[in-house]
Length: 142
Image (cartoon, rainbow, N blue to C red; front, side, top):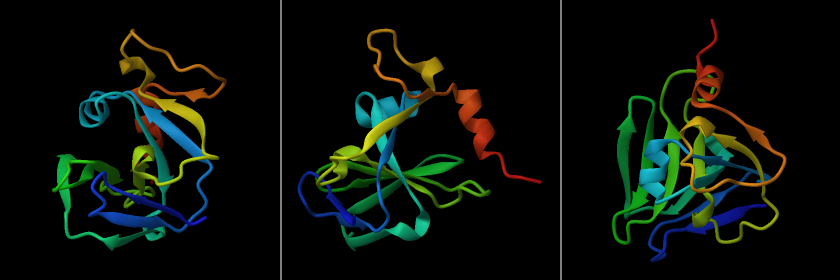
């Protein structure tokens, strides 16, 4: 800790100030289209992401619940951020591929397993959730 990261060309840089030990893999259609395959990311609280060079960071509102950041120069995906109200509002899901040193981060869950294409399967003993199970965790309390 901390973990630094950047886009492919290095124009967009950031630091994650919290410990990163767990990663998730998302198989939803949007993440597959955005990443070109399985999106692996680490959850980062809203106050634990510091952008050090962000002039080339673009943001695309990809749904009513979130937005995706990317470098406008090289096109690298950087993170997904939840914008829907509730306890997870503002949480970042930083692309593991954007981290400078992702060692020591273990895959602990797969999301939208019901949307995973049949041509591959991740091995290991980790938690697997359907899309419905994932969304049930994000519903605001009360």
